[in-house]
Every structure is written in structure tokens, then in C-alpha cells.
Amino acid sequence: MTILIDANVLLRFIQTTSSQHLEAVTAIAKLNDQGHTLNIVPQSLYEFWVAATRPLANNGLELSLAECDQTIDGFLKAFPLLEDPAGLFTNWRALTLAPITFIGS
Image (cartoon, rainbow, N blue to C red; front, side, top):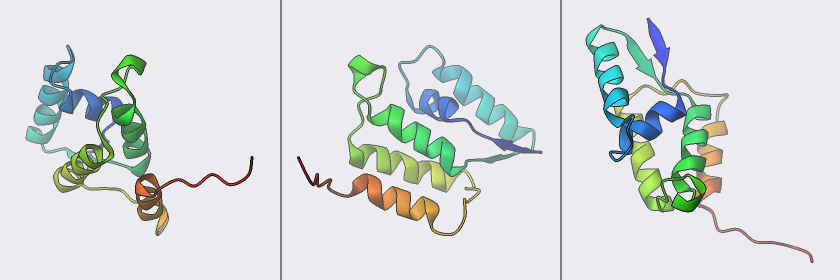
């Protein structure tokens, strides 16, 4: 069976201080051991990025852009990515790392 991993599972998987960390790790291992195909989708990675880079005071993990990008690289190596239409994910990822310029008043 193909199973999609939700952003909240990804967040708890890397957040070792979370009370749900062990549950996330155990669930992923158990599903994998049972022969299920665990996949990620761009939407889960977008949601992960938003929460992981949010400040701790705002219920985030306060990862730097580089730390978050490195973590996503790890997810991409561990789980197959079911892609959106051609180029959408790659363009989004580049935009998240690009400097922001505000124009106007």
C-alpha cells in the first residue's frame, strides 16, 4: 500500500524533544517493515518548511533556511517524492531561498 507522510509526522520525526517523536519514528518504521511504500508530496514539504522555520515562540522549530533545506534533502533521500506538475516543486524551493526585494511604498 502507498502511504503519504503528513507534514506533522515529518515535524515530530525530527523534533526529538516532542512527546510525539517516538510515536512518529515507530509508526514510520512499522509501516516500512510491513512493506508499505512511504511517500512524501510537495504539499507536506511546504507545510514542513513553514512550521520548521517558524520561531520557537510561535510554535515552530526555528530551523535556519540551510538547516531546513538540509532536512528536506534527508526526507527526499529517505522517501520517494510524488511530484506536482513539472517544475512546480523546484521553482518553489528556489523561491524559498531567494532574497526578497520589496518594491513600492
